[in-house]
Image (cartoon, rainbow, N blue to C red):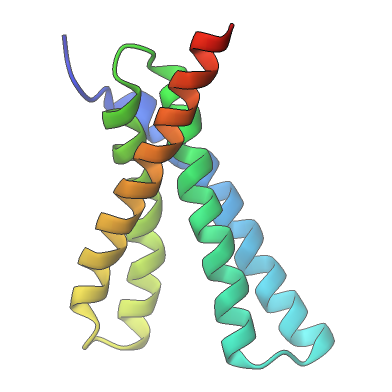
Length: 123
């Protein structure tokens, strides 16, 4: 038995990317419509990115019931790293930010997988 099923983790990451893309759209649209500062736009995009990691881990845990935590963590990493690469393109000196985002995404995704595991037991 494989601990991480990459197709299920990727399926969870797609959910995370949808949520994160919505956050980026809200940040860009809110910045244009309401003249938000760059700090406000960053906070909005970050909050949606965190929710994306959580939802991605949750969905990945639902897709792979045998190992929800490891698949949730993988989905969180797959969600967080592309978002952190945007920051790396803007400032190449933030290479450790990618590592931090991967660890944070894995933690939040594993929590989402844990919640999905609890929801499957409740049924």
